[in-house]
Length: 337
Image (cartoon, rainbow, N blue to C red):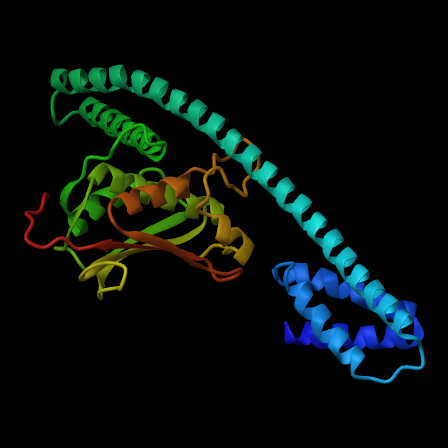
């Protein structure tokens, strides 16, 4: 504010002395700066008062009427600059609000569509699961058909979990959480994720923490791992290493007590800062139309937050991507294996 006051006084003195049009142009720019600095219009009164006092302390060859008139012209130009800048900013804000409102309406409509599709898929999965369960009862436990039926049932259950994740993200179904042993549950989740990767990919699990208990859902954990592994696989175009690690992490200010850290690291191309900043946004994807919904990471974040945890990215172009999931440890709970 002090800098603006000094500059306005200087330009007023120039104009009163010589009626220099360049001084008026500079004063208009000062009016624009007042808006850009988020200063209220009342501050103009202070600028004018200081400038007029500075003018009055000098001896002028011009008549007092001329000095007053030229000082008033300066104030008028200052107000013009302020008004134009304020109008432009108001129009910009209004356009941005309309854009956000339109985006929100599109998201709401898309959410309703996704929710309807998820419910329909859930209805289709029920007979698949039922027939697979009946098939398991009708064939010998050691036969090939038993293996096939078990794979169909497991896939149907995971598909149902994905549907629940989508519905949970859309707030149509509340998650049902319980204590789980993170190390053992993660081993089972990784084995399921391993079934869906191509031969050129290598998926490795490093378990440095096996016995910690978290409050979550094992099917949702599998959904997290499957989503992250599939994202990494697409980023690496089916070739490379994916390393999943679980370990103990010290207490953080945002989480009470110790926690567990699950990281999923790939050696793909990585993301730049712009893409990484939007990676968890719903329906954001860098893949071509028809090759991704942009919901994978958004659902991962929603699940992790529902468990009381945090998720973040460590990535940069040329050095791959690591997804970091932090979960609070629950003490005094019985594990489920």
